[in-house]
Image (tube, rainbow, N blue to C red; front, side, top):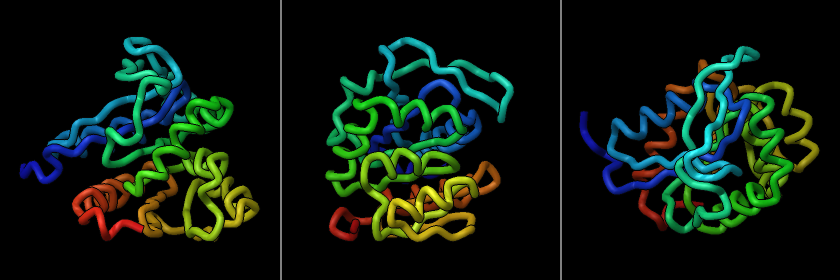
Length: 187
């Protein structure tokens, strides 16, 4: 497999309750293409994050970097996996929201799947933008000033969003495309 993303660094921000497949599959896809991926969480490096398969507890994943130690400018993209509990807990973490807000200032791609766009709402990044998500976020995104449609993937400038695990293949492809675009092409 070609290492199209060699030299790229990707931050994945998550905590307990992450929909496991929405973390594992994008990470594997990016790493297979040569990207370095860090699991960033509001926990200490080396601590564990518990994944879920819908409502069933799944695998524990090791935190690569505490969110307070992560620097947005060190990464080429940010991925926000879903699950209900994961982004709901992250919305209560001032450091997680600050990381998302500061990352958005870099101009690099931000990708959110399922309930992940909740973090974008709390970071004030939705107004005037087009998104998709898990259907229960439709009203939340609209109330935050965003446009919502029920599509497998939506790309609005540097923002990429998808609805659910079935959409992961097109979600991953759009993240890769965004990482391969020249810096000046990012909006």
